[in-house]
Each structure stands twice: as C-alpha cells, then as structure tokens.
Image (tube, rainbow, N blue to C red; front, side, top):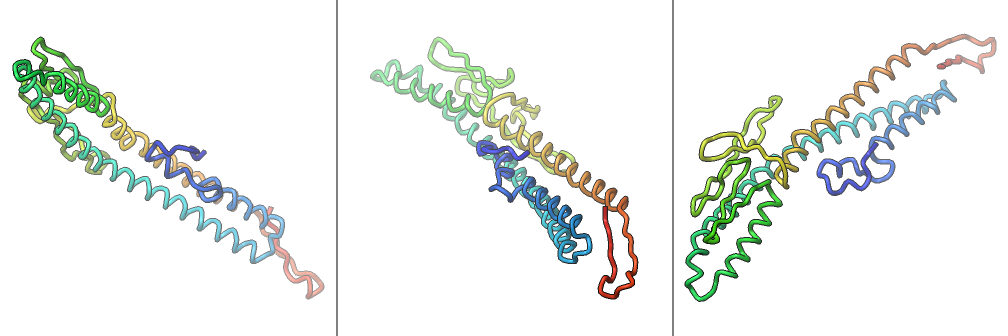
Length: 244
C-alpha cells in the first residue's frame, strides 16, 4: 500500500502519488489488461495492451527506485548540513558561557543572555539528544551520550566522514576530539539518518521483492497456459488460439 498523506516523510512522499499513477494503479491496469486478453485471447490489440501495461509497470518500479536513491543521497547531504548547524550552536553556547558570569556585573544583561542561551539549547535539543548541566555561575555543560560537547568556553565539535555501507559512501557522525562514533538516539539528526539507513533501504528491498514476485509468478502462469491451434473447414474461421 502507498502511504497516503505521508508528506512529513521524505521517503513517504515518493509513494504518495495521484490516484492511478502509483504502484497500485499500475498493477490494476496490468491485471485488467490480462483480464481483457483472457476474454479475447485472439486479439492482437489485447496482447499489445498487456505488453504496454507491463512496460509501464516496469517503468513505474524503476522510477520509484531511482527516486528513493535520489532521496537517500539528498538525506546524506542533509546529515552534513545538520552537523554544521549543530556545531554553530555549540560555538554560540560556548561564547555565552564566557559572557554570562561577567554579565552580573555589567548592568544587568544576564537575563538577555540567559534567554538567548535557553533558545539555543531548545534548538539544539530538537536536533540531537543532549544532556544539559547548569553551573552555579550560569554556565552550562552540554553532553551527548556522556561526551562533553560544551564545557565552559571549550567546544568539542561533531564531524562527518564518509564510510562505506553496502558499498555506498555514507556520511557518518563522529566526535571530532577523539574520533569515536557518535551515537545519536533522538532529534532531527536521528530522524534523517534513520530514514536514510533504515526506511529507504526497506522500501527498496520491498520494491525488489515486488519486481521479483511479478517476474516469477507471471512467467510461471504464462508457462502453465496452453495454446491450441486448429484449422476450421471454413476459411473465414481461420485460426483460434485459446489461453486459459
């Protein structure tokens, strides 16, 4: 089934086709063409229709597979952009850590700085799962999977390197300071990688299964059919072919 209304998912939108244009519409026309041929097996037009709808179905499957591949590549680029945005927020938080303790003595600007800090923390938390520890002087420590990203004025950035997954270079996230793999459990960054690494490969596998089943079952049924030819005494009757 094509997930209707899946506009919130980059992968789901590929299958959210107008009525009759997706996989289900192509399959319906394909089966209908075979039914028409079964009713008039001697019809050249009906045979041509089966071939045409078969070609269209194959084209539809290939287009969906290609679109999924393009979306997967686009999400790979999105991982890099998201990491860059996260690192920029970390830099701002570290800078605020340097300003907030001094602001208590600079005309009462501490409240504005704390508001900016809280908005940045909220933005960061929507992108990646973090733990935040506030110090008595107003500074914060930001941790990801127990790894310090911000400590006072010091920052440990995330980095992206391409690692091979199933023979495809894939943007993978590491901690820049020690090179260890960053385990992302929640947030937008987790959503992007999960769609790229789990959802889309699952869709591609299901498309392969559909194509393989179609090829195997249609060919099996076709081989099991019979074609009986006989010559009628009347030249007008010609040849009659029958396909069960």
